Amino acid sequence: MGWQETFEKIASELMKDPTHDFEHAKRVCSIAIHLAREEKADEDVVKAAALLHDVGYSLDEKGHEKKSLEIAESLLGMTDFPQGKRDKVLECVRTHRFSGGEEALSLEAKILQDADRLDAIGAVGIARCFLWSGEHRKVLKDAVKHFDEKLLKLKDIMNTESGRRMAEERHRFMLEFLEKLEDESNWTTPQSSSTGPSCR
Ligand code: NI
Image (tube, helix red, strand yellow):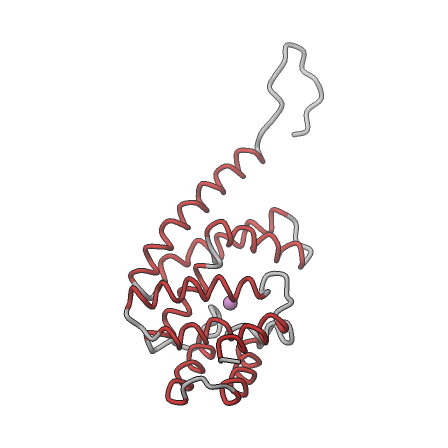
């Protein structure tokens, strides 16, 4: 079995979290490959890093980049993944996290960060935000706060030019969605001639 097939198999087995399931890894992988082509980065590195970056999430949500790093380290050694590129993959995994505080220095690490952030915005981002909020017993109003706190800030901290372009479009869609949500949330029964009971 080649390295890609092995990483896909392990990731699909380990990633069982509602918002960080194997589908997340696959989407990040597709975005990362696209960005790598645009930015002329190493495709093997971003592909491996995208598949492995969240493999530790189900086991340890809080320190998941460390757990993912441990797993990635042992997996890279067990497969035919090019030896000279292993450290680059590990750097991507170590630095991918939004709130991790570690700076992504290589182009490939920057691309993984961008791809992971792109999967947190747009239509998929909206869906994941509410999925996460439900899982953590949050009401709608509190879930919406996450847009201001994090999701609407992501387009301004993209690392690459092609990532920024993709982020702009996804950002616009989130604004459109939030506007609609606000409208529907404030919708009131149209006034009739007799003033009936009101919910507000
Ligand atoms: Ni991720």
